[in-house]
Image (cartoon, rainbow, N blue to C red; front, side, top):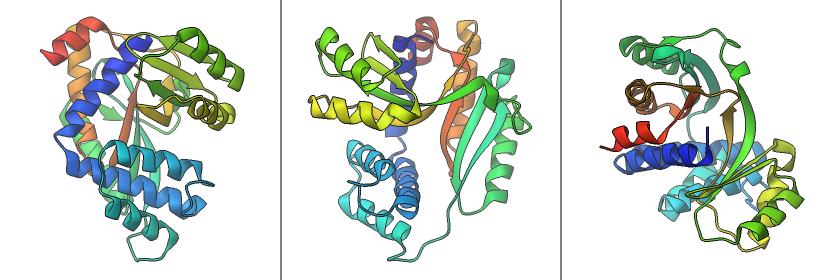
Length: 247
């Protein structure tokens, strides 16, 4: 999957999410709560919380919402216990899916996912059937104008494993070096459009553009579920498919 194609997919997802701002706020609040629960409420010493708060600010989430989510995580205010889970499945045309969920009711989350997958031509998979197709990585996206040579040196010296220049700059990092690369880029003055831990497909599958659009529409149905945080697929996006999707 090329840098341009991956970023195009992210842009499409962000545009769709803008129409569902309430769901986005709920997703981010869950992320902040779990990060606070696991690593405390101080973003300076909790990388996961800092990333979630950056995402919240990028989505223009109100400060009060962010503070409440942190306090739920640290136990200062009561809230339902949240469970993180990753489910595996298939979209149409055999495209593998990893579905990240944060829920207070695991049975409801599984039932909702199974219902949508079955209804729109996919199916659930056994644990391990799909996950081997992905590698957990740090992902940073930068959209500002940059000196490519300068950015490359900063990121590579800090441990980035793959740097792609296109419509934006995409940087892929193994988890061991993710914090260091992010910190080095921040100190060099770069601003991030996205900085998160993702599941990166090892061997993305290319489809006919019309079939790819069918898969993207299918993924949107899964993303619409209340408990779903992220959906990662083994689909390789092309410019032709994105053009069809945006038409």
